[in-house]
Image (cartoon, rainbow, N blue to C red; front, side):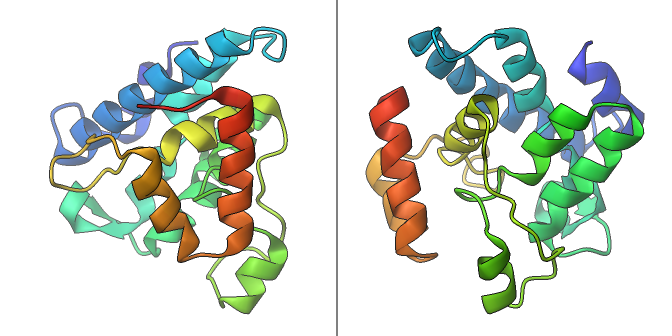
Amino acid sequence: MNPLDLIRVYYRPGSLAYDVLVRHCEAVTAVALCLAGRVPHLVSDPGFIREAAMLHDIGVLDTDAPQIGCFGKYPYICHGYLGRMMLEKHGLPDHARVCERHIGAGLSAADISAQGLPLPKRDMLPETVAEQIVCFADTFFSKTPPPAGTRRNVEEVLAALAAHGKDKVERFCRWLEVFGRVE
């Protein structure tokens, strides 16, 4: 499966949304594949990681994020579960799980309730190695300027996650131990 073919079902090539999405997903994919290469004993299908990393943010199209060319009706934080629904329609349930579970360092049902997030009240924590790798790789990149795709360092990621709870920092640090530093 070529992820770009599926992205083109929803995004017009040459549009701001398409360009930002593809550039971001290519950056995340490169890091995810590097990480997968470090743990071949844990990764049975690097091709799946490539596909899932390229599709992990497909749901941004339906969010209200005009700075990246998206003019949907949902808050940006919804893009994970929106992507899940899109990919499930295409018969890609495992890819869909990666979409839903990649936000931040993952969200628990308790996080969603406590913060009043406009998300389904269920755990959206990365469980499989592929989910963890894509989520971890994604924490290093932003889609918004300046410039989109700029890689954050470990300290910047830790500072950003700290604002969302100690459990996010701890999860990220466990991934650092398993997958290594991304610099």
